[in-house]
Image (cartoon, rainbow, N blue to C red; front, top):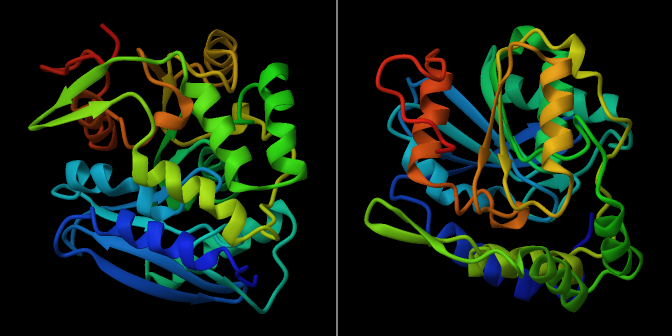
Length: 307
C-alpha cells in the first residue's frame, strides 16, 4: 500500500504519538507472507505476551498509556494492523478476506516466536481479536474486547449515516468531524495516577486518526461477517464505553451475555468510543490485569470498573 502526498504529515503525528511510549520500547518489523508488520514492544521479554489490536486508523501507537499500565506484568506487543495506516507494509500474498487476516496473525505470532498470547482489541481491533480467538483458540489465552464493533451487534444507523462522507470521500476534515461529533457530548475528566485523563480523544491520537485518511486514502481494511461469539471457548472480558455513539451499549451487553454466558461484561461510565483506549482509567487497567491473571470480578480486593 503506497503512501499519499499527505503521508509526511501523518508520520509526523505518528512519531509524536510514539514519543509518548515509555523508555525501553522497541520497534520490531516482523516479516509475514502478507507483508512486514510493525510491532511496538514494551515490558519484560519473559513476561506473558499481550497482543494489542487497534481500531481502524488509530495505529499501534495509540496504546502508549496502556503499555505503561500493563507493561510491568506483561510483554506488551502493539501492532500496526496490516492494510491500515502505519509502518506495516503489505506485500506478497493478498490480504482481502477474513481467512487472509487470520493467516496473517498466525504468521505474526510465528514470527514473534509465540505459541500463544493474550489478546486485547479496541473497536475494529476487537472484531479481529474475536475472529482470531474463534479461528485459533489454542493460541489465545484470554480475550479482552474494548468497545468492540461488529462483534455482538451492529452500528447505530445514525452513526453509519455520519460515517458515509468519511468513507466515500476520505479526508482529514471529514474524519475529524466524525470523531468530534461522537464525543461532543462527553465531558469531564478522570484522574489516573499522576495524570489527568480527559474523556475526549487524546490530541495526538485524534490527529493520527484524522491524517490517516489523507496519508493513506487507498487503505482497505479487511472486513467480513459478524462472527458467532457463541462458539467462543476462550475466557472473555468485554469493557464497553458508556457514552458510545457507535452502537447501542445495552443491546451489545444483552447479546454478549446471551452468546457468552460466562463472559465478564462491564461498562466504563462517561467514556466515548473514540476516547478509548487512551482515556482508559487506572481502575480499568487493574481490571484487565486481574482478568488476564485469572481473577474474576468480586474476587479478593478487586475494585469494580462501574460503580
